[in-house]
Amino acid sequence: MLDRALYRLRAALTEPRALLGSWKLSVALMVGTAVCYLMLAAYSWAVPSHVVASIASLSLYSVCWALLLVNTFVCIWNRWRATSRASVLFHASFFVIGTGLLLSFGSREESRLRVAAGERFENLEEQFIARAGTLGPSPFTAVSITPGFWRDQLLFTRLEAVLDFDGAKRTTRINRPLWLSPATFLRLSGFGFAPRYEIIDAQGRVLETAFVKLNVFPPGQRDFLVPERFPYRVYLEVYPDANLAKDGIFNQSMNLARPLLVASVYRGHLAIASRPLRLGESLALEGVSIRFPEIGLWGEFSCVRDLGIPLIFTGALMALGGLTLTLFSGLRS
Amino acid sequence: MSAQQLSYASLIVVCLIGGTIGLTSLRSGRWGTIARLSAIATGLSALALWMWRAIAAGHLPLFGTYENALSVATFTIVAGVVRDQHRRSVAAAPATSLIAAIVLAQGIGYDAMPYALTISERSLVVDAHAVLAWLAFAVFAVNCALSIRAAFGNDDTRAGATLRTTLTLGFLLHTAMIATGSLYKFMLFGRVWSFDPIETLALIAWLVYGTLLHMMLLAGWGLQRVARWSIAAFVVLVLSYRAIVYFPAWSTYHIFDIGLKLHL
Image 1 (cartoon, rainbow over the protein chains, first blue to last red):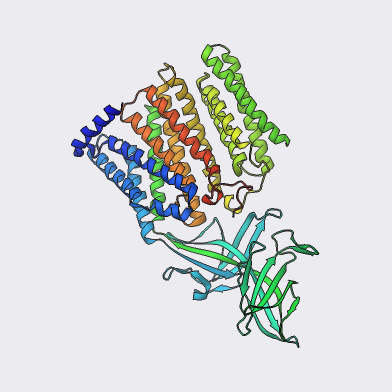
Image 2: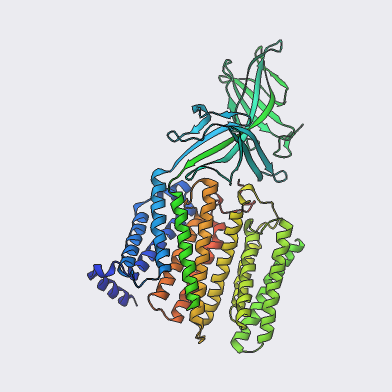
């Protein structure tokens, strides 16, 4: 069997022009590509996903697909009259998808921004976490950000934001993007707590106050804030629905029902004060005190522009159309 | 063990008994009526359990390995029964029952608690993706069942056409499954493809079945050869569907078992 295969391979290689545009080369390339992806699947077991993505971008994989596309093109070109329209439609979809993927690879841009509930997004640099060129949505106000959880577990059953685009209210969810143009969309991709702090003097006058968007979700995660006019670093943990007992903090759910903030204040490396606080309770520092009168929510939004996407899904529809026609013509015959 | 888990375990036994009766009937040429009735009973039991689970969970049973195994097995059993009832014969159902028993046996070890769907699983696109995946698996399972028969001496002249139809239909459904998965990936992450192992495995299965279709349509492979390779291709498909849970939880977004991974 091996002898026969090798003989055929030698015969094919002596006439490469005859091989190009043949189903035999297509089959060989498909088997080769499948083996390459089998290796990639094996890598997925052992290395992180960004390494897998790097391996997948190696020229070996691109060459496989490029050769498959070239061979398919020559196949269709040589047998244009003899090939069924369904088969042409299916195979032509590869070129549309391939063009879409190339366009996507070359032109995809993504900006990420954080806006708190009630805040107006004005395309300010400080509202972006990462910005690609000038990509960003038009100004809007985040009317509300609403999470919902299943029982007491960290399972989101709801996460949506209502945005006001100058009078037009639109809702976005993590899996329901808002289309800003045919190739650009905005979607809610994450959320967190935004407590408001107040630094007050001995007479109770507010010296400084601001909302801070902190990464303190899920409960137990720690983040810090630095007041503008005071030399402190305030580390915070937020437990949204907590009971304070002698032997620790018990968080009952993820809903902001009875928030408890564990604050630890440092000046340089010197620990100044540390204690769990309910909303409105103060923590005495050096002549001033800090308190957290309210907690809001912030949402992280992704704005993506990808010109290849319309082509990719057009190609997918073509492929499905071609296969459906093939199936029905097979059934008829 | 809850009543539902007990019924799940019983379904494995029912599948094994139904499959064995069917295979015995195929070999001996007797007990045809008993084999047909047992196949119908297996199908109805699977459907009843599947609907019970859907009502208890409040959504399509697609969350986690336990629910997924139940759905894949139910679609597989029902596809075999429907095919045999359509042809008024016993050909696919015995093997599809045994395939379903293996799939169910894999799922029984996983968390059976009915969870609510997380926000990332609440979409018609996800429902369409899951149903297409189950249908594709079921059609390829019927193809494999018929291939087992054809590879070991069936001289049915219609078998070639049936294998071709099931291969093409399975390939169409598998392609639609990949397309809807890709669409939902784009809606969730802003990318259509990221080489998550589930995507890579689905692509491998797609290439394998694509190659097989080329060999059948263009190379003029005979019935028995196509049948043997269809069985091999089905093994690849089973791995692509069911092996994802053995990958590390950090490597994929497609493990939904709460015990294995907490996810958004």
